[in-house]
Structures are given as C-alpha cells and as structure tokens.
Amino acid sequence: MHYSQFARWSLALHFLLLMQIGYAANGENLASNRNYEGSHHEHLHQGHSTTPHMDHSVQVFFTPKDLKLGNVIPIFFRGRNPSSSSPHFLPREEAELIPFSPSKLSYLLQLFGFSQASSQAKAMEDTLRQCIIIKPILGETKFCATSLESMLDFVHKIFGPTTKFKALSTQNFAKSGSILQNYTVVDEPKEILAPKMIACHTMPYPYVVYYCHHQESESKVFQVSLKGEEKGSDNIVQAVAVCHMDTSQWSPNHFSFRVLGIKPGSSPVCHFFPADNLVWVPIISNFEGSRGSVSSM
Image (cartoon, rainbow, N blue to C red; front, side, top):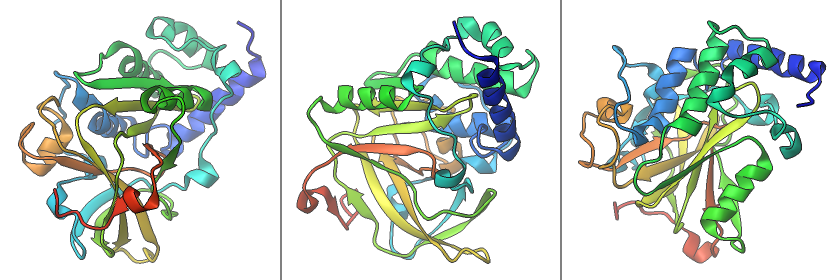
C-alpha cells in the first residue's frame, strides 16, 4: 500500500488533537464515548456490558409523550459546530488504500503511530469491532462509511437507485464545549414523514467514519425547536430527533432503558442527534412530508 509518511503523520496528529478536544471521542472522553455510541447502536446487540455509573453523555433520551410544546427536557448536546471544526471525509480512492479491518489493527496502529496501550488504540478497536465484528439485529442493515461516496452508495441501496433524498442534522448549536442542561420545546415539534430513514453516527477514528444503519421496524423523525436554560443559550437549537417505535429487539442493557426506567418493548424510545450526526430521508412532497402534531404517538 502506498500511503505517504506525511499523510500518515497528518492523520495521526489530527486524531490526537480531536481526542483532546473531544470530537473523536464523540464529544466526551473515551469512557463516555463508549457509553454514548453504545446508546446509539450497541443497543442493537445483546450482552453489551453496563457501567457502574450513569454518564451525562447518555442524557439524550426521552419518550414520545415528552415531545410537547413548552415541555422541559434535560439534554446533553455535544458543543461543536461541525461546519467549522469537523474533519472531512477522505476521498474514496484514499480511504480504500487503508485497510479497515480488526485483523489489521496492529498494522493500523503502526501506520498512524499509536501504541497498543493508548486510548487512541482502544477507540479504533471499538470502532472496528462495532463496524465489522458485531452482527446486525433482526431487521437491521448496517454499514460503516469511510468516504462520502460509500455513504451515498449505502443510502441508494436502502432507498433505491432513483429515489431522491436529503440529510437532516441538528442546527444552530454553536456553543463550544459540552453541557447538560434543560431545554424547553419552544415550537410545536414537526414530524418529517418518511417511509424509510437511515441514521449515521460519527465514530472515533483517525479519519471520518460514520456508522450508518437502517431498521425495518417503525421509526419517526422530528425536527424540534429547543432553547437552553443556561446563560448565553440564546440560540434556538433546531434539533433532529428520532423515535424508535419498537425496542423489543434491543439489548436490556441499553442505556436508554436505564435513563427512562423502562424495559425493552414497553415503550418507544426517542433520542436527539448531535450536530455531527445525520439522518437521511427520502424526499417527498411538502404537503405530505411533514406535519405538526405528534398526538398520533
């Protein structure tokens, strides 16, 4: 494989910096990252280990009854503006030069200059395990995208080659750092009607990797206007939220059940998306594509 030493050093240095500011760890330290990412997709698998404490990074969950105008929801948003501080995807031709496999972890650590005992090595190992080793649950299709082209290929695979689609993300969250605070729903939540959806979550890795997955079970997508209670929280956050209507296949150890005090299959589970995560939905007409009421849940 031909990959220049300068490119390797650049990616390794970038990863180190991102680990320090929290991006590569999804806004938290590595322990919190494993909690947070587990919140979003390790719920798909049985036997996920629990941690002895509840980390603030899992405070993104709620139930459909919480989606009401004027309601207050405690939320942990990672404070990062993806338009200004996010790294970009590698081009497909560059990403394909680098093996993406747990069996190549030792080689990858050497390639990027990380020791076996480093936190970066653990983060990379976790990402490769979730992307490659852990199998999807019944009704789920998953894929880890290492380039924009591969992500779009996956979206086309799920939605169909001729379907037009768009990406939704949480907007107007420009605060630096991460904070747990109460947010008030300041406008009627708007459901984005979509026959299918794909959620894509950032993963800790030396370059951009998204864990994308589609579930056949029903999910509902919402855009929610939120205002934080802390000083300086003047921006109205236009948050994207997804409600999973059937959680019967989720692991009993999933963090949402601990946060909400419920059991698998007993209630829909909703969660907000950080600004650097994406929800892909097919484009349908404006008349059919959204509605203001959530009472049908």
